[in-house]
Length: 483
Image (cartoon, rainbow, N blue to C red):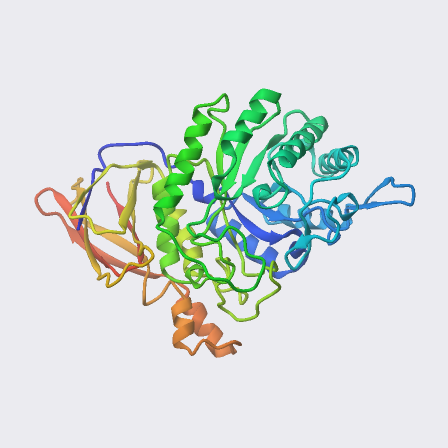
């Protein structure tokens, strides 16, 4: 397969959608030491800006209670520690407002997940609205208005799976008006639905009722699993193109409404929705991630990958080093192939350049850019294996770029491949130990690092041809200085 990249023609500027942000599990995990350390690593190395997590309003944060007369008693002690740590990591909150205080729950005792998320619409909107207003005012007083105006305030999480449409629309209206009461310029939005559902109904509601909406957020995974409240479950993966279909349809709904131009945020996504699915750990997940930004780069305006870390508690903690967790960093602080994919994406700068394929191999694609200021061409080439694909062989790929001034150039490559850059397969080769000793840990840490190499390429017929071979699931970044 040949990929012809015309570095002399500029396309659109690179939008680093991959660095917009990440998700973590639920709020109180930020009171640990390991999760913030993973977040700090991701911010420093991948440039993540925002972080989102569940259940900020819960008995575990202790923010809400009532006295004997039914009056609100608010305690921000734990919440302050949580958001202090977020900001200390250089991140900003993509603040998911939820869930319901137990005292206001209409379905007391009906909760999900290990940490008991109370999935109920509030029984008293006067009390709910006071809670939200006072909480936002507290944030403003603690962190300053300039900081808070950069936060995103998202109402609830996947209401299509819990409280239903009518209750959600009423909840949304009350919540965003309470947020805006604190400051009329704060960024508010929703509906944070699964499978990109309800977007048309949500837009219709905010238009007809003149309710503020500064962004649309929704979730999708290429699997048939809508929701799983257990440790294990069967997950049937779909073709990754379903992600394009869902988000492209969502974008069309926005563009055909008065909300045209409002950002579309891919609020949760991964290669499957199952909490114990080994595709999250595999090398192929890196290729999936790169493919998503290739497919959706003209559609979405922000990405919040689910999830940053295997420090994760929806089904309780899992101690096995690789257990199919959503995270891109495992419980032993080892980066997976997914983390390396974000590292490579973060190298893309400048403008995209047009590509022409000859004899295209199924699953192969490229994001190619030219940074005119630094005079560097980059091509991020991937080879994603779709579900149920059998007997895929290696892909021999030639990347062609036009000759510049020099007769030779140095080509640097960084790869996620069978040899290194994806640690899960090496853990299996080590016997899949449930507990890692120090020697094995050092070995796996070494294998988590991507392979780097340099080759000299000579011009032939006024062009340079760079040859690489990708096995299924591989991702390789090519970097070439062009003067």
